[in-house]
Length: 298
Image 1 (cartoon, rainbow, N blue to C red):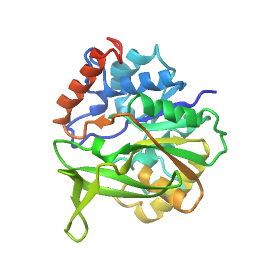
Image 2 (image 1 turned 180 degrees about the vertical axis):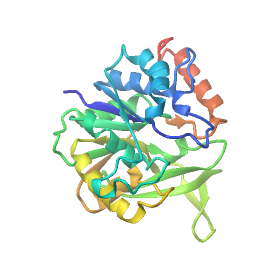
Image 3 (image 1 turned 60 degrees about the horizontal axis):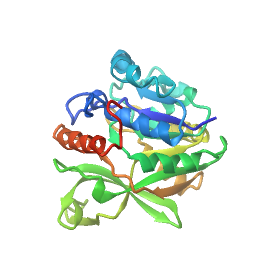
Image 4 (image 1 turned 90 degrees about the horizontal axis):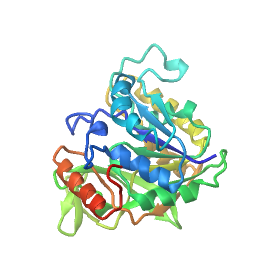
């Protein structure tokens, strides 16, 4: 069975000002998701599972699935704030999604094979999918060996505002720690941010970062369910605190429940954190089509 692709597409897009997952960027009206699926299928991946909010199903079917169903088998999984362990059922009043870690759990019933998890609004590049496929294609379903595709920080910043990034430290090819840093901006020699002491801290442009491109086996769901339960013990009443994939991965790596191979990629990453990012994304994709890296239409 081919590894599957899981696309986390239930975000609200508050900073962008709308559902950027469905916005058009390509010359023939393609969304970023179209490029993700195209590159994944070319690399060898099988079915695609979209994790979305149920109220957006019709829009996804119209804008996305009708245009890519010739490429891949499509399934939808729904992220719902009330999808919690039984002991917490009935006590949850939250309306905001629980975060990317919870979104991953929403795909559990659709997955019985190794899979790659990605964000819906990020362009990851061909090499990244090829590298992930090579790692996952021979993975055992019960294996606790996962992977992270690592990007250069300098290639993962916005020209239009600060961003949060998961800085990863690597030891002998494996992920050691993840440091989530908010409000990172471009600086002359790389990147910078204000730390907890309100002091300017600088980061090398070559720092490896995770852009939420993770290779997992079905074994991950057992671990994530356990971690989410512990998260709710402290945060069940919270309206804002999120159960995030980088935090979860960092926890299983630090406790050695799983090993996370960090696979560097030569791919260029870009995305749309802010509405102003759209112009640059449109230009980059148009240039790729002009170089015949993608057909028109996709």
